[in-house]
Length: 110
Image 1 (cartoon, helix red, strand yellow):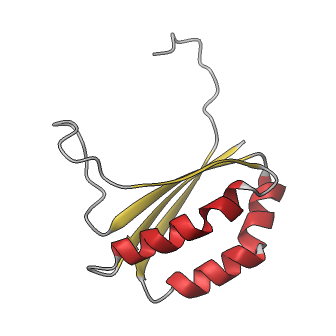
Image 2 (cartoon, one colour):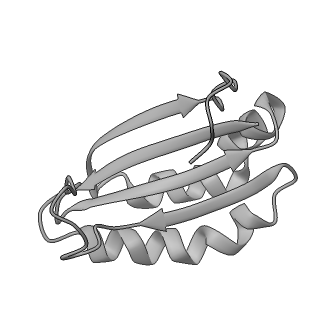
């Protein structure tokens, strides 16, 4: 399984428009073969004193994909190409973290 965290920062005052486009595209992404999870998230206000905020213009997308082939197909899907064109004027920066589950080290799980 591949886990992605995509930190997508909109231009000031454009996060709501970005979220609208994401949520409109969401059913098509969730229907893709190999999509395990795809969830746009935003900062939870007042959650914890240890919380680090992503920021008022940032959406963090939590993604889980079966394998590289599923992720590659996602990136090339027609609906994702249209989505990317639609949100390009809204996006200031993005950071994509591609992760794997850590191997068990023998330590007790939390």
